[in-house]
Length: 96
Length: 475
Image (tube, rainbow over all chains, first blue to last red; front, side, top):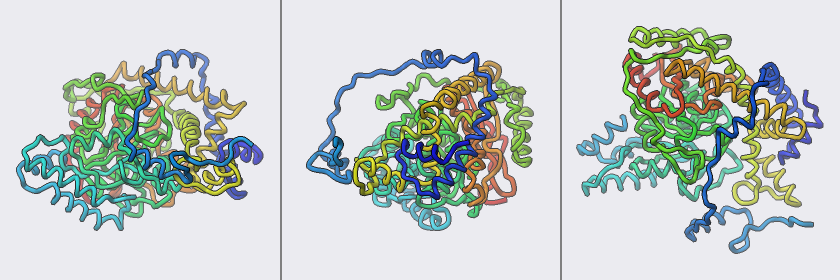
C-alpha cells in the first residue's frame, strides 16, 4: 500500500504539481497497479546476474565532435524558448 | 491503392502525383469529421512534394521506391516545419526544426507526407483516449477506439485517408491498433529503424515501424526506413537481416499455450486457432511451445517502461521549449508547467517510474524487473531454437467501445498483454488481419527471432494468400 505522504513526496521528486483530488486518485490508482506488479515477487530470479546481461549488450561509442547548425535552425530553436536574451535562453535565478 | 500500383500508375502516366494527392486530400476532407485520425494536415507541403515528383517524372529522373505514395506520420515523430506534439498539451505549439531519420528516408524515396496523426499522449495508452486533443474513432465502427497509442496512424490507413503511415511501438502501439483497425503493422527488431527524431517514451523498448493495407507495402516502407544511423547508437546495419525463401512446408510454427488462456475472448481464440489449422493444412509444422515467464511481462513492462519514461520526460520543464507556466523560482516553474502540461495517464506513469526508482525501492522494482526481462528473453531464445516463428493473437479482444476502459488504467493495460513480451525481448513482430468478430477485425501476431523481419513479412504474405482478401466494409 502506498500512503498519501508517499504520493506527495514522489510527486515532488517527479516535479509534478498535483491538486488534492489528483493526489487522492493517484494514491488509489498506484495502489491498484502496484498490487498487480507485486506478482513479480513470485518469480524466481536467483540465477540471473544483471552484470552478466550488461556485459553481453556492450556499448557503442563515437567521437564527441561538435556539429555546426545553420543560423536559421538555431533561430528556429531559440525562438521556441519561453524567454530569451540574444542567443541565450533566459531562466530564473539558479544560485540564491 | 498500393504503393506498387501508385508507382506504376505514375510511370505509365495514368495519373499525376498531384492528382493523386488531391484525391487523398479530398478523402481526408470527407472522412476526418468521422474518424479524427489527424492532428495536422499539411495541404501546402503535400502538394509541393507532389509537384516535385511530377517534375521528376517529366524530366525522366529515377523515382524512389515510395514515389507519390501519400503517407501520414505519428505525431511523436519529427517532420521539419510541422508541429510535433506527441499528443500532449506540453508540446501544443512545438514546431519540429528537423526531420527524424525515418522521415528523411521516406522523403528520399519520394513519399508524400499528408500530415501528423493523433496518438495517446507521449505514446502512453491503448486507445488514443489519452490524447490531449481528441479521440480517434475506429473506421470499422465509429463508436469504438482505433487502439493505441498509434491509433491515428492505424485509422487513417484503414479509413483510406493514406496509403501507409508510420507509428512507434513500445509495448504494442503499432500492433494493437493494426489489429483493432484491420491493417498490417510491423514492430521491427529493436534497432532496425533509427529512433532519431522520435520523441522518447522508453528508449530501450521504443521502435518505429510501418502500417499499410498489406504485407508487401509494409515491406517496401520498412526497407526504405531501416538501417544504421550515427545519430542512434542502438541502430543496426542492414546486413544483419537474414532473408530466406520458404513455403509453409519448410517452416516450424510455435504456438505458446500461455497466450491462449484466461482473458482471451472466445471468438478471437476461435479465429486465431482456425488460421493455425489452415497453416497446418498448408504444410506448416505446428509445435506446442511454452514461454513460462511471458505471463509476468505486463508487470515487468509497467516498471521498466515507466522508469525510463520518468527520466525521459524530465526534459519537459518549461525552460527551453513547449508550455511554460509562470512561477516564483525555477522549481515553481517546473512543478506548475508539468502539473498543467501533462495529462492523467502520463502523470500516473511518471509517478510510478519515479516511485520504482526512488531510494529504498530500486532493487525491489527496477532490478527485479530487469531480471524478469532476462528470463523472458531466455524464453524466446529457447523457443526459437525449436521453431522459426511464433503465432499468437495480437490482443485478447477486438476494438472496445470509446469510454469503456479509460477510467481503469489496469483494464486498459490488459489490451497489450500479448504484445509487451515482444518489446521486452527486442524481437520483431507483425500484426495482420485474420478475420472478423461481429464486424470487428481480429489480428494475428507473427513473432520472429532477432533480425528476421523480412521472414515475418514473407510469412505474412503467404498467410494473406490463404486467409483471402478481407471485406473492406463491415460484414
